[in-house]
Amino acid sequence: MTTPSEQDWRARLPAGLRPYSEAAPLAALFLGISSGFAFSMIGATLATRLAQQGITKSAVTAFALTFLAYNFKFLWAPMVDNVRLPLIGRFGQRRSWLWLVGVLVMAAVVVLGFADPGDALYRVAVAAIILGIAGATFDIIIDAYRIELLEPRQLGIGSGMSQYGWRIGSAVAGGLALVLAARIGWTAAYIACAAFALPAMLVGVVMGEPRRHREPAKSHGAREAIVAYFSPLVEFMQREGALVMLLFVLIHKIGDTLANLTLRLLFADLGFSNDEVAFYDVGIGFVALLVGIFVGGIMYARLGMKRAVLISLVLMAVSNLVASRSSPTCPRYATCASRPPNTRSSRRWRASPGASLRRPLLAR
Image (cartoon, rainbow, N blue to C red; front, side):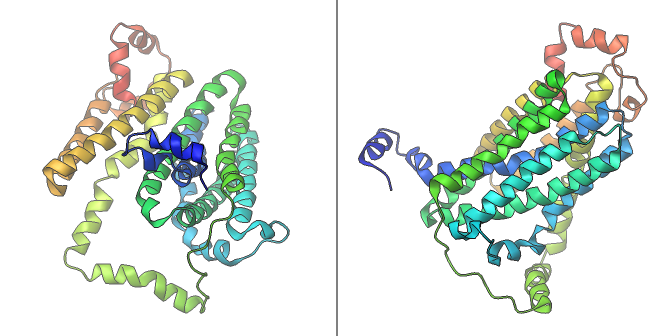
């Protein structure tokens, strides 16, 4: 409940900004921050750490399998929805799970930080899998808490705030880990980044237990659950053009997906420092993302869906081609793998006057 002073403060804001200053959308922003950081800890950040430890490229890219937990989190979502936790369950279904899983995520990040890739790579793999499962479970409870916290009129704004929070959490945690790792080591960097789980946990303390919109559905057995899950997919595949749409979704992101898996490996081969990667790849990349979202919205409004998507796909292809041509010592990605990092020519290139213009081309 807002106080008169809070209402007066919001009344002075432009009408378009007032909904964003309400408590629930702001809470969604902080929930998104905690949701996004765990993903980055097992993504590009871990890839950079493994590359710097001299782990083979095939092993590094295999760590992408840790993201499968995010794809299969629906399997244990009913447990989070229905199982009441002992002791802390009295604080509410959502808050108790939010606090428990938040602590587990922090612990998993710390364990991953202490796992040394050069000593035993399998320990890093196990820690990354545990963090992937904990992070996916954190996503489940954060989504449930946010949806029940927001009023129907706030769902659109709250969803947008959550997405921005996810991007902020992912970018800031990833950049901070790189900067700290260059100064105090990867273990301390991961320990520090574990604190990014706290915003969501504090939201539970400040905002309280949200009112459930409806009681959880009763389970009717494994067979009924499987039918209920696959029914929407079967219905979609029966529509005209469904196969073409699926092929479009699968194919149009192949270039970016492959690039994102190997981009940090390329940076390591070219000898970029952690500070440079944090500034150009994470920092400028995040700003470019925000600008792209804004421009994409304008293109959609003025050109329509089909033309806006077509132009965006062309720009994606061009950006990948530009990145593949931006290395002076490695004309193509394939030859970069055979180049030793920090060669004299690569150092001379990075120190040249045009370096400030060339590096953003790699900061994707």
